[in-house]
Image (cartoon, rainbow, N blue to C red):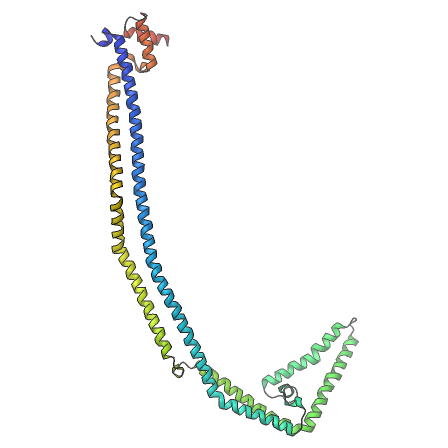
Length: 362
């Protein structure tokens, strides 16, 4: 005979206490699981923080190395740019000086031709405007550029001006256009013929001689342009004595290349050696904290595992010892209290009788 038969009330008390103990065990297991999760998060957070700190530190150190050398390269580039600019300026001055030197005889010849040109016209007492290039373009043209200028002058005086005057008239008629053209031809054409007759008629020989001087000067200007073009296109820089500038530029370029090599070497050393040293030092500094968190996690996991086993054993014991007799629906404190009251009041003679009557009431 078991306790459930001999003393059902005590059996029910033990069943109720077993339920309370199992509930307390489940609550402890829940807390243990929360502690394990908290310990896991703390360990993962510490590891993540360490990883991010290492990544941030390594990135900063790498950028510091790079920036240090980039500043040096930037300074060298500035000096290199300045040296090249000075070299270019010196070359330009040399080119200008060479052009001035090699064209000096031709320029002097032009100055002499111009002096003789003026002297011829003064000697012949020609009007002052006869000594201008505009006069020769209009009345004694020579060469493509002067004939082109004369053509545009005729367009201006005998096309654009009369059309402009006609368009300004308040009333426009064909007769007015003819009148404007006739007046334009009379004024400008007459003035042109008058000036031509007055100058060429009286000073024709001097003007023709002046034309010869101007033609010679034009040829000389063309010679000057050809000389300047040849000097500018000359690939030889030997006449300009740029050796000092080339030496300075060469040294700066070598220094730049050397700095780039040093930067690459420093970066390689950082990647292969320094990074491992920094990582190792940071790992060592954080190891104590990580070990402590790992121990806490291990302890939480051990306690959780132990409580899970105890909970499982407790559930098995409840099932084998109490649930088989009371039934799963009655494995509750309030149900056990009702069974207890039925037996204590005498309404039920045994535990099975109490369960039967309770189920009948349900």
